[in-house]
Amino acid sequence: MKRLLIVAHTPSVNTLALCHAVLRGAEHEDIEAVECIVKTPFEAGPGDILACDGIVLGTTENLGTMSGALKDFFDRSYYGVLEEKQGLPCALYIRAGHDGTGTRRAVESIVTGLRWRWVQDPLIFRGEWQEAFISQAEELGMTLAAGLDNGLF
Image (cartoon, rainbow, N blue to C red; front, side):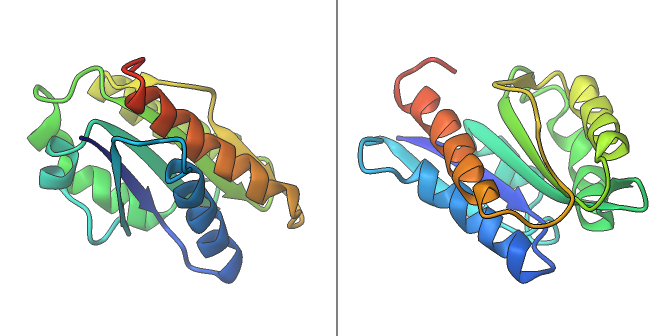
C-alpha cells in the first residue's frame, strides 16, 4: 500500500473545497493501493513526510508568497527529511487572488532544495473563484495517486 500525503492550508470554504477535491480525486474508485492522509501544515511534520510515497501541497497566496502555515511546515520539516526523501513525487496547487507567481517560485525553491520530483506543473487557481477549479483539483489528486498506484512514481 502506498501513502499519499496531502498537506493543505485551508483558511476558507473555497480552499477547503479544493483540498476535498484533491482527496476525492486521489480516492477514485479505480485507485486500489493508495492510502490518503490529509493534514494541515500545522499538523504535518517530518514524520509524515518520511512515511509517505508522494505529497500534494496546497497553499494560498499570501502577500505574494506561500502561506505562513506552509512555510512553518517546511521550516519544521526540511532538514529532517532532506537526505531521506530525495525524489519524492510531489504536486502543488495555489489559490491565488492575483497571479501566484511569487508563491510558485517560493515553493519551487524549497522543493528544489529537497530534491523532490514534480509530477506535473503546479496548478495556480487565479482570480475570482471558478467552479472549474474543483475538477482541476480532483484531476491533480487522481494523477498523483494513480501514478503511485501504478508504480509510475
